[in-house]
Amino acid sequence: MDLDELFPSKPGDPLTLLVKQDLDPLSVEELKERIETLEGEIARVRAKIAAAEDHRSVAEQLFKK
Image (cartoon, rainbow, N blue to C red; front, top):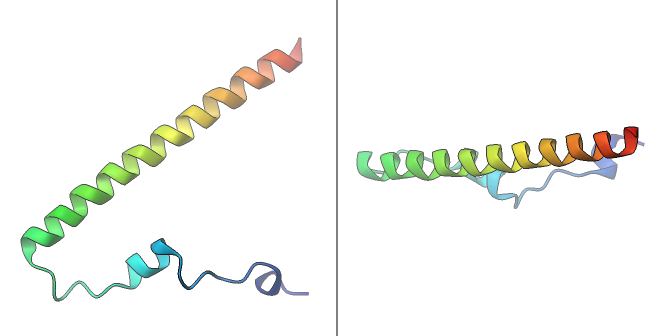
């Protein structure tokens, strides 16, 4: 069985839709707003990753004792 059969792609996934969106109809201002929004989302995801890594590190230290 192929992995694609087990885990099919998500055509309605927001990230998939985002990268396929046509940027031509957007104005320069709209594109700048889009970048600002995406940079905010990147910061939010990086913070979540850092928190998860910190949590894992604490758990590893706890269970090593």
